[in-house]
Image (cartoon, rainbow, N blue to C red; front, side, top):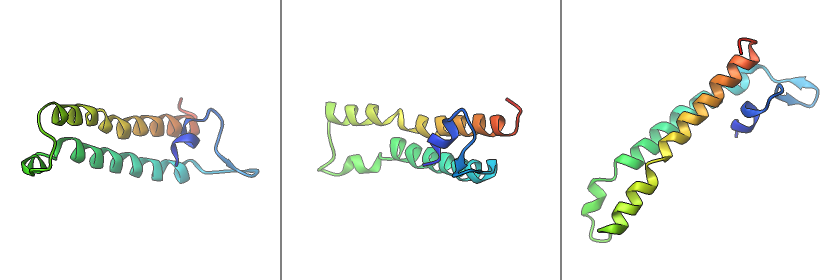
Length: 93
């Protein structure tokens, strides 16, 4: 939920009050880290589930694996947007 606020070119506001940079920066940083870890584990950590008889086999397993590989980029991109917001909000950008 913090990404749209971090990606905007003007400061985040609640009514007329400007929201402090850390109020958006800290949750977005934690979210980026969590999304990166969760999607990384889910993309690369399903090896033992493949032994399940109901697990996809052959081409279906390949498609499932390949389609989940870009997911860790979501967290990395959120982190990038967060850093850009932090730099812009503190006048370093």
